[in-house]
Image 1: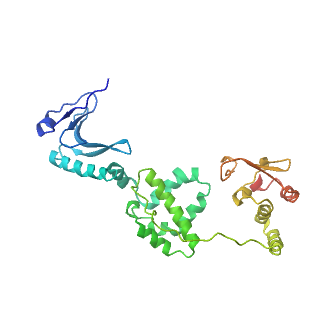
Image 2: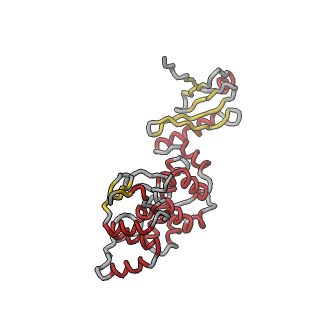
Length: 295
């Protein structure tokens, strides 16, 4: 059976007479919405603000009764409730202020806890962050970084596309941090990307033989580029081709990632098959079983 909330006008006498129980309980203040006295089984008493944000309950610890006067607790609760009315989440912002740490620490957590598990191109993004962002922001408090800081980093990068890639890699870190409630917002939002045009350059009929001959002198990497040119598949898939995926002239690419043998999975996560031309099959047969990229 659901119990009615224990509501009363909090006073110094009410607080002094509050007695601990076997479980923690709340005494709600009738003067200030959301304010309650929390009494622990140990006898410790504190003020808390309880409110709803996006239809979920939030708890904000205001302070112990022996350190925070009741009038001050009501004033703080009123200010915080005003923030809630304006669409903010004070409890999340409080956790974020003490949880992010330096940008380097946050970026490393993102890499280990998320990127390596979810992002197949994490190495490229990590390299961009280490080269263009960490030298400047590494020791900065992540919560203190602003849009102007992001624009300053991008302003030092030569190349519109490269700047866009650095912005995307950095924004991914902040987006994760916001989702983990380490930060209240993403300072990369609102930073405009550089306008770019779709690539229209393709190799001409006379250029293809020139590239092909150059690939012949590039060793194993050249073979991979030749297979890429003949099959039209993505570089990451060609570079990680496995012998066990080849059978009867077909190359079957599993959609799922297989960390045991180094297969990254397909971009869309769906398994698909590619018919290998005779020249590709002959090139692969000449490589031998000692080649790591197709072992």
